[in-house]
Length: 361
Image (cartoon, rainbow, N blue to C red; front, side):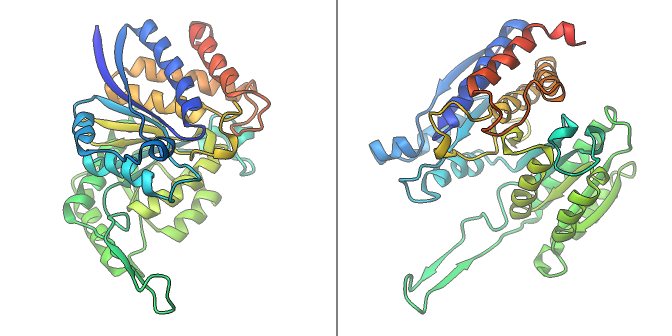
């Protein structure tokens, strides 16, 4: 029996409630598909910081490097300085484990969830590959004369040839791998703003050079503002998008709305072949914490992504099919906190569907 070491960080707000449902589904998959997971829980969160004043120590980051994957709920507490714990946990993972790919599937499971008129599930099924360790999130910058009329704030965005190329190359490899499962040829779209931000021309040049190695892949280019427009007007044009850190952060939230809301969106933070982290992309939503109303589907689909990454592809597919069935059938009417279903009820519905999965096929 294969055994995986999984770190679990429930986090703040709705994080623990969502993670509990994801773990419930994970345990069912362990039984059905005969693999095991050693789950190691870590307390780091805003609430933990308020009690202990402790952020993530370096030895814990070393420990994370020895795991197969990390499953994260959400980080953020209203009584803690904005970004303090998020940088410690999320950037500790991204930079400490060099998780240089942020992978965000954008897929409509039920037409009624999509806010765009006449767009069906077959029209919106693409992936955003976001470079995850560079750009404006490199943490280079600061303040001079803070709080005075003469205050100056600076931030430096960094793009390295290595960082840009490995993100672009991953996007091309992903497009090729996916082509067998899609009724369309592979395509990769580069999204940048190199017309106004000239250093981003490193993306344009690198994209052209890497694309020459993949003649079977169609290529396209869009400036980020145009990309946002086309995501609304013609989302069916996209297959794989590759982009810089900040732009990827923004357009994937837009993508979540195409799917039906933040409650269904999941992501992987990857170092291919090494320890990677999986999470729903919603925040900690403190106003809903403890009310058992948050939609856990993003957290459940993050488990599906994690299992796919670990090689448990049958289990991953089973979870995604169960979620898709419940949404398409209308049994789960929405992916927000106002569906009329509790967090626990939605988790139980996914679990029950998985237990009767053969009936779906």
